[in-house]
Length: 529
Image (tube, rainbow, N blue to C red; front, side, top):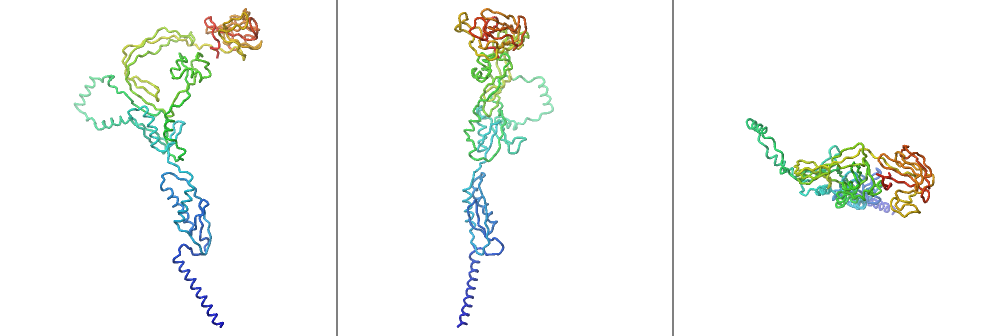
């Protein structure tokens, strides 16, 4: 009985071994998704992408290949740069039996994870720079359209075409503008097709002879072609290709308005001889009250201005200015330039007209230069004077006149120049100066250098000082408590001449200050610096 059991056990073990061998054989042939175990370390790898478990693979290097394939497939329909997170990690294990996933399944899962991690898509764009202004446009075509729109404002015939070329001396990817006159191109093509015949011998000799006998005629007015002759941008334009987020791009219509629309730009005007505020306003085409408002040194429209003084003016200018030249024929009534005769013994404030002008009439062909809509130059090519203009001749002084300062430090103005209600009995109803209330004993200084012509008691003015100045003006200081100068004494601007007080017909301690021109009182505040 024991022998039978032993034989049955041996047969059962043998059957089990054959069955196991058969299963292994079948697995090797028909189950390739299982890897055989080898004692060589990790032989199965779990893939993680951006923290997400993707699947299991048998070769570590294959995971990177599948990731690259997934990336390429995801951006295959885009011409732009696509940025996405792709943090790939592998977790290896050494196993006897292990199931691995299909490559297509792994790649598909990677694509889903990558698509959800796209951070931004950068579009191929163009950055245009004009001085300190920069704008980002979505295409090269938009750049050209914008620049062409700036040119077309002044080119009604659309002869001038804008193109982009590589900027010489700059990096390869820096572009600039090139404006081409298509009308001239056509002329050049015709000329190229009509090459003149080569002359020689007798023909050349005769041509030379007649050239000497018949000099070239001066062009008549009808020989000049009118219209645009040149076009260009005033500023250097630089264009660089870049990749930008769509949020950084400026819509075309907005960019067009920013580049072409005139913006307020502060500029400086230097006063020249003969200028007045009204004449400056006409020159710069800005209302006089706006010029006064922009300049702290101008109290009102009557403020005196000096040669060389700089005034702030606001001129409207676009970000991108267009320079152009036009050849024009016109007939006009014109004025001759003023002729100035300098007098070295006169002040610059003194002028005298010694010849009145009269207008003339002429026919002209001129090349006129413009920056945007403003004329910046005029070059006369031909002129025929029908009736000559007579110039205005003006004598003018060359000596810079003296300046005047407030004769007292601080103080509160209590009475201005002109009509007023008399502050007390005996006071004038027409105030001939300016009053500043100050404590008795406050220092009074000479408003301008000159010669003292009166120093002492002045009836209703109390103690006074009168000073004559080089420009013929006189200043007076009244109601003083003490006089510090004497008649005939020369004083300099800012020198102490007296102490303020309350003498004469006075309502309290103050300084009364007058200025006289040609013997008549004027408002001194109009002449103080």
